[in-house]
Image 1 (cartoon, rainbow, N blue to C red):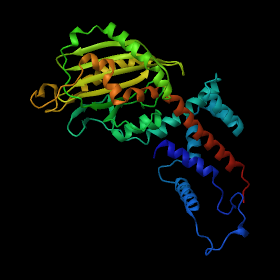
Image 2: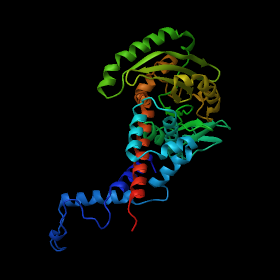
Image 3: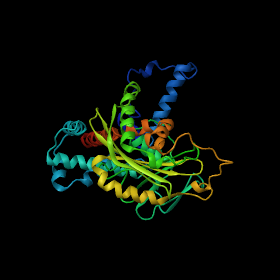
Image 4: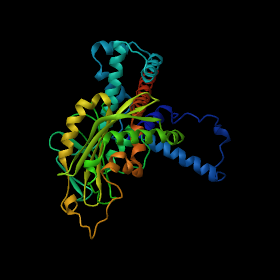
Length: 388
């Protein structure tokens, strides 16, 4: 079950009236007889909405109850942090959650509680994902990933869960899947990352321009283009973005027909920098795109991992670059420079999607804080309820 639906369920459970309690503003004596009660369209719509809420509130085997969320948080706290946490009443806990979300300075016990909350969020979301290992078929015979012991794979549906539910991107992108580290969740704010895999069938990309590209000039053109597009980004609700420079200059291997580079992107609001690491594998009829987004301070750790990823993906026989048939196959309208400049990204709509990742960590934390807050409130309500 998606985390957003789980949180809706918990919120609904905490706010629905008891079975024997009258609805607000409802007078049982004035209730019409069954013969008189002929619901109109408005009443039918209201009944449907109530039925949907009731369905959300129905506990399922995969839905942790508020007490389970609360207990999971307590289990993550060390004795000192737990002793501090147990002194807080619901109002103080809510104030702490708001303080965490606002990014205000925290005391040591508060930091321990914040880390505990973060761990619960990641653990619950991770439990919903179906990680795969070994050799992975992409696109029904299009290509193969050889993951070994270093990486795991999420299929298209689970990749979309991460991109949309966890990273806060709008729906619409349908990736082939996502590569993630073997021992770290893609949601981990310190070490986590995901390599999103897509395929663009724009034709055979000729690489005869690779040796002639001046990457410094190309960077200047890309920076000018990025600034010129900021007005459009702002009007569409996306954050203003700046291309600071190469985090890793472009490299093209003509023997394997693989290309990689990394860019440093920066936002004004929130003021953060992001690492955008890109791999392109050229094929007979198009290009496999592998894009990793992480924080800039992860570059030393990400670079060797992406070098591994570069060697773990290959087109299947019949789809390889050397399988190109000029009598049957079309040629792309751009070359290596076009791939780096982002023409494919803009066409595929992926660039705008990647931007939303930069502010997703805060959104995920906020959603998790809501869940913890509801769990704490529910726990105290039951704890203070008079026994029968």
